[in-house]
View 1: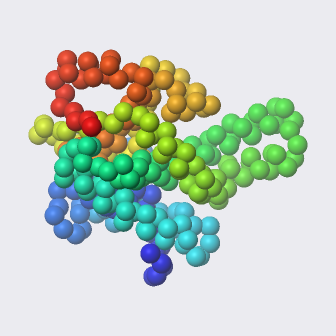
View 2: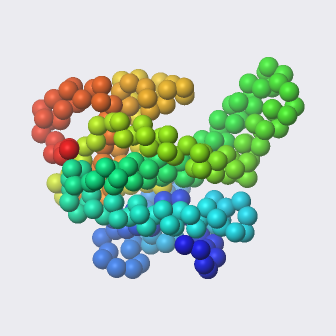
Length: 249
């Protein structure tokens, strides 16, 4: 909701991060690992997966305020899944809310912004090789900068989430329950999309490519998994043979 200026803008929401903390109240500390620095440290959810004015393109903080309103809805469905440990408890509307959350979370991170910049750099090389027009070059070149990539990311979050969520709804949903003594962990880009059947990604097909799998750790005990429905029988046979505890609708 609108109100006091929020300098820190989280690209992974605090309600989500709190599900991985052993604390029952503030400050909800987590043990963190910095891959770049190869170091571990302890921090509260308030101080991680955030950056100053990460989203907003002006001082109005319109995106951050919008995300705050959306997150209150996301948080309710997220908590319901964690507590019930069942996908079948969700109403169709709640399931779509979770699909929308996954779409939103995938696009909103620092890693995704870096992907936008890398893709722009590659496209710029192609434009230069083909000697494209100057206006096209300026448009592509803008995406190689932090501010330009921020614009592209904002546009994707405004225009692409519903289409992405519609694709997720069509996948098979499972819930994996961690019954070991070792808690699950997450990251600052928590949506894992992979395809063991077709490891070479196809930019035109995206998650529509056969064999796509998506894992979303929801807490230290629960992982939401979305799988290509065309591979359902093979997958269920594997899970049963492996003795993996999973729940579906």
